[in-house]
Amino acid sequence: MRLRKITLREIHLRLLSPFETSFGKSDLRRILLLEADVDGAIGWGESTAGENPFYSYETVETAWLILRDHLWPLLKEKEIGAASEVWDLLAPVRGHNMAKAALETALWDAEAQQKTLPLAKLLGGTRDEIPCGVSIGIQPTNAALITKVEEALSAGYQRIKIKIKPGHDIAPVRALRERFPSVRLMADANSAYRLEDAPLLKQLDAFYLIMIEQPLGWDDIFSHAKLQRQIETPICLDECIHDVEHARAALEVQACNIINIKLGRVGGHASARRIHDLCQENSIPVWCGGMLESGIGRAHNIAMSSLPNFSLPGDVSASRRYWSEDIIEPEVEVTPQGTIRVPNVPGIGYQPRLDRIESLTKRREVLE
Ligand code: OSB
Ligand code: MG
Image: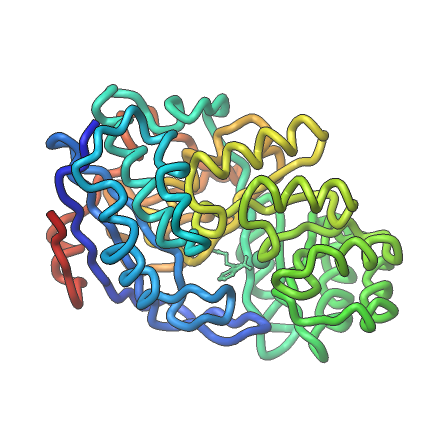
């Protein structure tokens, strides 16, 4: 396959309600979409880089620059055997995985269309539906939080994740546990604590959370290993894991018992699959994280989640939890059992709504 042209776009989409984490609040999402023309087949990808470098160092601006000036030149005019080779072709660029993932995932979509295969099948997926959870941002009161949880449970979602930060941790978790004794519950700290906070984090053991996600430094695997020796709650790593070698290190030092895989953070489907396979060999379950994606990124997340070791419910939820109107047709829907059916049509399995995407586009750059 030969990459003929890519189009970068920035679209703006407002979340139905602001999403607050330990590192800040997100309201108007700026989303970088990438359209790849591969011998006439059009594949779509999404960069999950944020508006600010608070989750990771990447932003929409850095992803745009890296794609235009450094990644596109590496693939332009090259004969590529398959999308599975792209991760290695992009290796000369250190890091910038979210920029890489936008391009790499678009090529997987294009290849799946050319082979008239659902992307999930091309990736080696085995599930025809995936289990879903929700991620609930920091709420002003415990009462507001309980209402959000009630709504998610009545929609069928199988697992509840809440965001915590210093000063807003034990109390909301206790309130939820008292109200929902048997729900599958977890907390995500987005790197807001230090190893010295171990005694506080240990108090969470009383609430039998299924895991605590990324309590310590965004690039600090070693301290997580030290923390895991001091607390019962299984640690799940998110921010720390950028590729299969990070995953290998984390497993070897026992820094976590579970890994959250995000396509953007790990640089696309090939890298995600390597982490998935390594975890499977080591009996470590994985689940698919979310980055408040539009329908394009969400469709890729669904395809990835069809791999066999995605055995825990992910943060892949229905379009209507995020947007008044998504940019794909049909929108992503969740069944009353809290699952999403993996589409059985070629490519990502949802149609990008070109007219809507066009009207949301704030800037565009065509590279050929
Ligand atoms: O840490 O999982 C995270 C959103 C933005 C940045 C980081 C994270 C999140 C979420 C939202 O938890 C998950 C979703 O897309 O619903
Ligand atoms: Mg997280």
